[in-house]
Length: 306
Image (cartoon, rainbow, N blue to C red; front, side, top):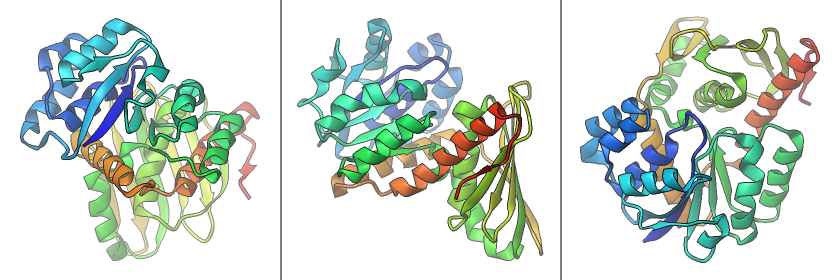
């Protein structure tokens, strides 16, 4: 049995509740809804019969506020609430850093990475060149670090990948989502690159503004990619693939399925002793995230990646 510690929670991000429930196979819907996440309760209830991942259990939890840690523990059946992060070292076989505030990822992951404990880090892995290179150095030194948006495992994207050849040569990809580039741009990129695995980004240009972010990614011998993240629109994640023969709209809605498959992939990775997702793929997409922010700060300058 793989013992997992989970680190949460950042504002507006219920992953520590949902991921712990998916792994442990239990949840308290009233508690999750009380904290302001009725949609999480709804998808866990709808999928109650598939909850639980064999050979893994979340045994420890830590939050900056102990009351939140106790709430997550109560809801998901987690036995131990720890007062300090490093109390988990030696007590768990793997750690999920379920916070999506990237400026805190290095500090929170460091005790476990240094202890050679496998770590899954919620999206985005980093939001600075310094932090990204720190993680890259750790991977080069043999440390187990896995990070991605769960949208990489969305069923809707896998169906699109299956049908991709019928579209002909893909000339343009557009994507639309709600919220900000910093935390949610990685969702759109993971969805696209999960379908179009061989794309290589060449340049990035931010042509929008804060809260109305528009990013152009040019690829090598491939389609142009236009990404749109607007804070004021209704919640959505849509990707459209335009080919020479046909086009396809991918409307991504099944959060539970992608979260479950992501957690299964992390558990399988721990069992196999290395991440099943290449760090090079994560590095490439975070590089695009950083380049778009640099472009915005430089008034829309086109940033070359190679």
